[in-house]
Picture 1 (cartoon, rainbow, N blue to C red):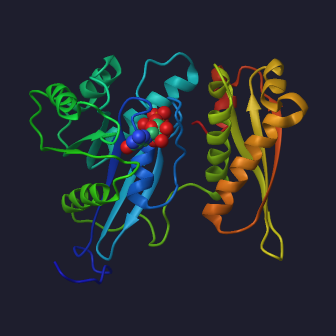
Picture 2: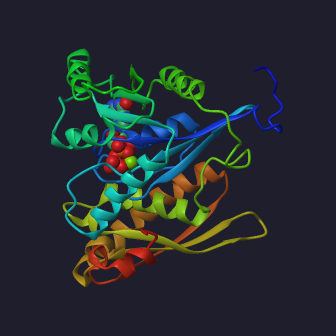
Length: 306
Ligand SMILES: Nc1nc2c(ncn2[C@@H]2O[C@H](COP(=O)(O)OP(=O)(O)OP(=O)(O)O)[C@@H](O)[C@H]2O)c(=O)[nH]1
Ligand SMILES: [Mg+2]
């Protein structure tokens, strides 16, 4: 097929591709690298991603809808259950799967949980060994991950790369994914990189910065949302957001002595927003308490976890 005209059905190929794996292996980093922009939050802390976020890559004739998913883990609360449910839902709906593993370490029980879920799915699978830049024994580790898929009947391909600093390998993998997409119409208009609203996206950037700065259990007790976004005539983006905590004792811990920590979170988030929006940003942040929100289905829904 050589036509660049995607208007005739049959001329286009498209599909959904889930990016799955245990927490912290680099799934969101890989999706952002596929797209060449920041769609999903990433952080050194496990369980950064909480809901399935779609990242869209469109060429003249092909469209991949990547679905970045939360890391598979043993859930401890209603939020954790929701996160694992997001993975199940994504796997049921997609045309192909990318399983990301961390080549610095051999497989753990959590990798086993992932392998168990995908081994018998009759869908093309890409086993992606990530973090080659910092892995000491990548080949040995890859062998162990490969063994977790033993007996799998459906098509499986493998690649080792660094999602963080190996754009050529990422582009190669993206091409391999493009090559297996079935014929079909585009799901999203050209030009968009994500299915999120700008408010959801900004809230995730704020949460990423909060997760990076907060300590102990606090990163997991925090949610974020953006309630207002207005544009001034001179182009300044005025964004007002909330950091939600589950106990009043946490409020002061997020704000920090003299408001220092909240200020730092706000500054770091504002900088990121300015880079990706190419606009000046005013970011107003408030910390509010929704008692026990992680266990409260209604609060979870209100915070976008439904
Ligand atoms: N050195 C190195 N670090 C990486 C690479 N890919 C990801 N990371 C880092 O690994 C950490 C986790 O990355 P994420 O992309 O947030 O991982 P994730 O799998 O989406 O994690 P969850 O959303 O928590 O499940 C971050 O600190 C990344 O910067 C890589 O190829 N090399
Ligand atoms: Mg993630």
